[in-house]
Length: 358
Image 1 (cartoon, rainbow, N blue to C red):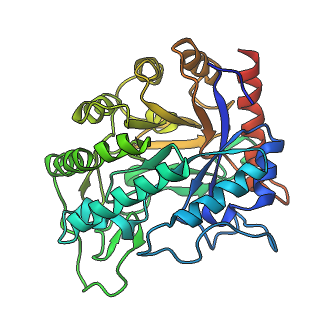
Image 2: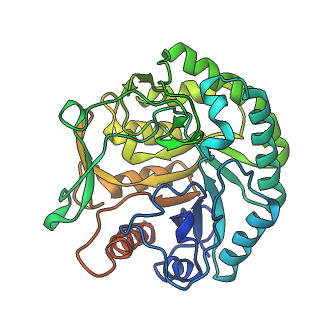
């Protein structure tokens, strides 16, 4: 395990990838921590494969069902058995908090549900809950040969990409939480309305997180556009992260600091943002990727070929005393029988080499 004051390498795994084989892959690549996505966006995608015949520690259908203490203890024990630590759960299920985002009739009950989830994480010993306070979520990316050598990755082309469409009723974050919702659309909201909803949410749940010993970690908007599908966004420029932190000053009101999204932002400097926020002590973990370009047009590429000097970035975190977890959140997929694993192995090895050298 790393010494004190040294950054730690982690790997993010989607729900259907929470298998003993993938835990071993992470450990073999030099990772010490896992960030687990319990909301399975890509369950049917062959690009992010599960392991045939290997037990998956995710939930078969968790829509509307709060995660239980037994389930979380089971996945934590499975990760620990392979020599790793479970650092964070990433993203609430839309069915758990859609009316918190939409200010709907079930808001108060869903706030109590989120409090229960946070208390459960605290009892299990999972220190971080990542979230993205967004209605449109991640949307508009297109797949193509954007990485070196034609490696498959994703890009965002703004008005030259997919046409923005209104969000149907019964859906947030591109996921259906109510398959029986009446036909219609979610009415657009303003930035002021969305910030007000976030402030109320944080005032409600941060005290519970403090008591539970859990850090709530907010992800910036990806893609970092002021609006998307007609809906206002929150953290789409670097300075807006500070606004979020200032809403409820607390060690439990933190950042899921996505360096790739910060680099994509039209406004501000990625190195200045790293320098500013890594001094705060309120980065719960870092998403690391590299890109070429900024909104409204950018491509995601290998760590060593984008616009950001990753060595310079990691030295900034180190100089400011950041000793938390860093995970490669996305990476181009390599042309071989295991595209995702090969791409992640390259990213993990690249980051580990830099960390060891500095």
